[in-house]
Length: 566
Image 1 (cartoon, one colour):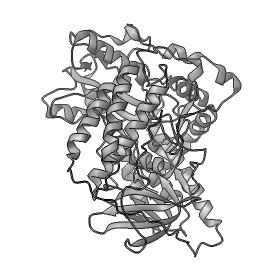
Image 2 (spheres, one colour; image 1 turned 90 degrees about the vertical axis):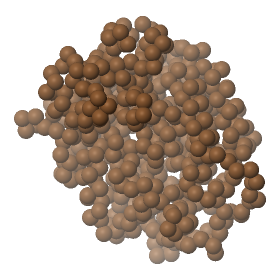
Image 3 (cartoon, one colour; image 1 turned 135 degrees about the vertical axis):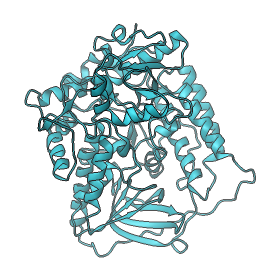
Image 4 (cartoon, rainbow, N blue to C red; image 1 turned 180 degrees about the vertical axis):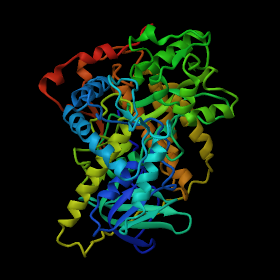
């Protein structure tokens, strides 16, 4: 399956005598919720360096409109949250991971409150919302539809009080540094200092997702799959790369940003209607607008095809206007900028790439198979989400695994007997001959994003995937070998590497499961109730059994979630 050409191990030339060196105990790549939560867990006697390619306020965590799921209502139960997560996950969740994360959720929410996060309340109690796939009201929100912004405000404020923490903003991580045995740090770049070799006793990858691989996405510009590409080149195991979750309701207005319209809008009672104003979700699923995201996304796609219309609409006109404006002030303001009244007008929406479920495989502590490297958050495949993430479990995962990674990295370093002697391997990468033909990087980037949306989007087929792979392999052959001098080139190379792995995974998985839909294989197949893994240097994909009991491994229960028929 894998083409003989894999691209270079390192993207740029460097050498120990030509590039400045920096030393830290724990290096964290990424400044979103998972990365900062990891930093907060590291022992204060250890030095921590956080590298972020923008600033701390520019991450997917910051833009999260939905909330954090947790069992805080006395009428709810851990088993309910576990069951909802497993059902949404299409049979690929690790039940032990799900149970552990769900049970940790209340304490993580309490921790955020103690740090100054102002969650929405009603009559002195947390105002709990309900979102698609949840059987109970268990979602805590902040500022109505701006939970991520409020949570990140509190976490950033607390992180800035750490005397042992140094943040490098506007710094691009080019590659992980590895010797024969372990990850030793990273090669980074910024416009003021150029390249720097950052050596670390432990490195934590928390770089976020890959939504920018698609034309239609809710993700910020920084979410270009860099961490997955870094781990891939370094030889770490990647898993389930075919599973990109598409959010069903993304604002679709010409000239406007593809802003997510939070699941909580449908949780509050909004309807999805077609171009003629007809509500359609009950015909696809008994849960209507509160069905899991994969089902809603496929239903919207089906309706757009049937009506030959570029989008469907969210209708809130039957709801109390004052409640809508109070609950969703950010969305009401955004719609107003385009002349739309959220309380009266139909709001044009369609699916968009939202959350990368696959990624770097990690264990319960966030350790990867590459010694010295840990990972947390959207860059990972932890076993929590399976084939489809349950709404509002993402910020929860970032909190839980961020804390675990920070604790594990801290314990590792404290246990080292030679803490004062960080040995540096003599790594280098030669300069290659420069290509004579210039490349229009923006053209290739736009072509990749458009092709991924058309052929590797919500609906896929063997034919469309084969065409996509042929195109990406062609681009890889002449883009990956080049040694670019700035982030636009490196980011494109990362997007090509990640896109190619996503396509390969989608070709191998000959079934429909969770967010992965194959027209030519429209049902879930028990044979594919397993992970698909990839590793640089291994000529073929490998398959991995999922966690859980023997009964769960044999269960065909996901078939009911696999198809959408009107």
